[in-house]
Length: 292
Image (cartoon, rainbow, N blue to C red; front, side, top):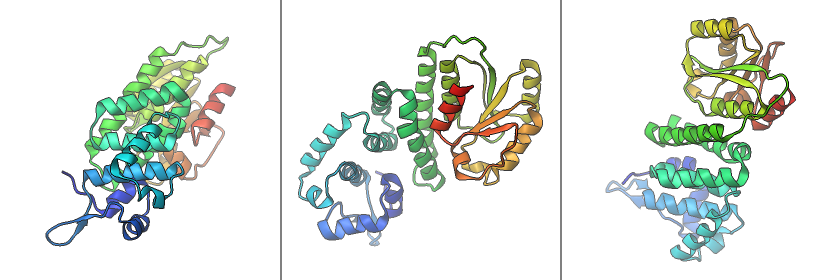
């Protein structure tokens, strides 16, 4: 069974370490275990209980009240919350829990429930993109294994592809052409696939190339396909902080207007010019594409 430090728990449940210690001190909620050398740690059952406590606390239950409940009462209350697919805080925690356990059936059930109830656009905005951002940070800090991040990302990727296939293309008078790709060193396709979904929904044509396309190749593709726009997504923290250098390099090889989305766009200042449109979030993306 995996052991978690309090800093691991802090990242996984989104609650500061001093708050977790206060719960322990005041209410004896989920006291940590100790190794033979007296080092504090939490196991998987502790993590699951803390996730349940956070879910209840986020939905109006005071910690003092939760502390008086029996374990089964907590589980029953959380089960009631789980049935509300539009409760993004609960579903985000549920996705985290399923990821830690590599529970594909549960993860897929949550995905399907959220998308059915909210629609893909709202589910991506309120649940899936925030979830992927948190998982990415936990991977970078070593709190979760790379395999757990890949597990979650691939299930979300597969679900978006299903939604793309299900979506009927809107017929418009003058559809535009987009080439969608990820530049070298960028591997995360979730945002790019979501852009493809939105473009199909809006009635535009797309050439989807996927991840880590060499700059020299994309130059040839643009010359051959002659798109109206190029669309990239920048998400990976491995790209570094100076994303303007990456954008500039892409623009050297792409002589059409460039649209850039992804979590890094909201975190760093982007130098805008006449050929560049940065989209910081889902609302920006939807509004821009609908107004074309």
